Length: 287
Image 1 (tube, helix red, strand yellow):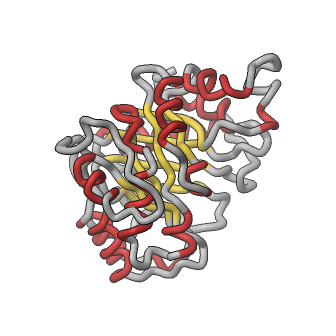
Image 2 (cartoon, helix red, strand yellow):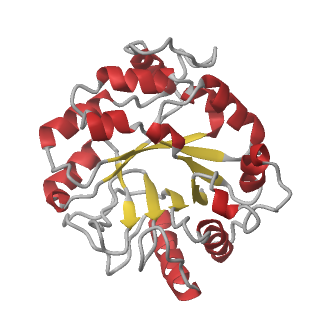
């Protein structure tokens, strides 16, 4: 499975460029989800969303669509992963499980001044739910809202996936790679125009890429030659191998087996993200 999409969908500058001029704002998700097969929800990073919103997003998107969901910054940036039980409870109680079968991986993004802390990371990984039923149990720790989830969520063994995006060079440590593999957490391959670390160790049973711009963060687009370079790497990762020039920290090979791949373009400022996503999808024969 290859999912290629965008990070967020509500940008005023996209109206009349990606979105038709006469498209009502409340139909933007419907439109975007019929052009691309996945979208990363980033509003959940800034504030806890409501069950009503998650239910609406589920209804507005095609049957074969899938979301990635960005974890709340209260946990990653304010609490800095300390005592994650209640913040995780509030997050999973907020209604995210109403995305049902359209729920893809969770993205946890750490701030640039977060230094590698093995003990804190390992405790956080242990607290992450690995199935829908575990997420229901985690939601019981909520202290800010009443847990809201589908009736069929308790007892569900549908797996949940997690990816971690790092932004500090102290993470360039082989021990970090082993920790991710121990808990089957994907290391995000983040193209950030050289601003933050780029590491290509495959640490999980899926691949998660975030393309923020190769020359200017959040602004620059990707030309065809660069997109073909990414497409070639994605084909290798999908098959369970890795590029010969992979930038890895561990001497061990990638986690064995074929991989699902999730790719999200975050170069939204100049409205490049949706068009770059579609072009990469065409190169990989999914659009």
